[in-house]
View: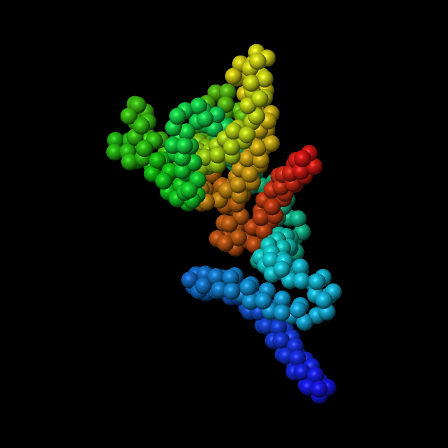
Length: 388
């Protein structure tokens, strides 16, 4: 009887050792596979289809297998140690992926921004000084400020207006569907559509662009909406001339590109704000009306304060999106005709002109510009949670 128990223990020990060995080999092997896949997908010589296939296989099956072998490895440990380590097994792959694809690139970008164009010489903050003193870069920053002001203000404003008015019509779902529909279109697709809207032909020829067809039909001359850098409107031009001290007049082509973004984001703002408006307690509105408030007064003194947090959330979301705007400018003008923005200039510096130092510096500047908005959102969410 004792010999049988001893033999059973030996067999069990062998099985545990085998599972332990398989788990260790599996974890180490998968880590090497993940490292190989990272280098493989970073290569410029690999076909895109192969990169997509490897990304899909590693991203789905590789992470699952890594968790499976890691969990088996933890199971072999004493119960107390296994209970303490197992939570890290669940979050481990996610942390590893975030570190490899977010943390490491961020640190490396900051490092490269302190070197010259080919990273052969340390230049310190020279790239940043150039970015904030060179006239061309100041024009780029001015364009980004104009994007931030106009897109955020008009997208949120139109979204609020449509949300209020659509609630008062019978065909509310249909109206909101048409307003929200552009959200289903990518930035590149929207840019292609608006290229036809802004298309320009010389005077005397048939205008295929919708806007120029309407404009010439009203008696005007065809306008190169995308290539015309500025127009002069008394009383308004001074606002743009004083922005960062760059005298270029009203940037017509930049405003035309901004209209595309407003068209895309108004539907998003409308849906979120409309849901918030429907959440305003009817008792508050009825109390305001009983006190003699008009509909407009009730809207500005009851509805707006109640949904102010939602409006601010929508505004900051659009603000972050506008800071990173790239697709529209790249497709419509490639940054020409004084329409360049930070994200597109970063791409040009990095991948077209191979100036890794300046491209990295612009990436860091863009990253730093987004951080205050994110911190503000986090603080506001914490305040709301404590208020509840």
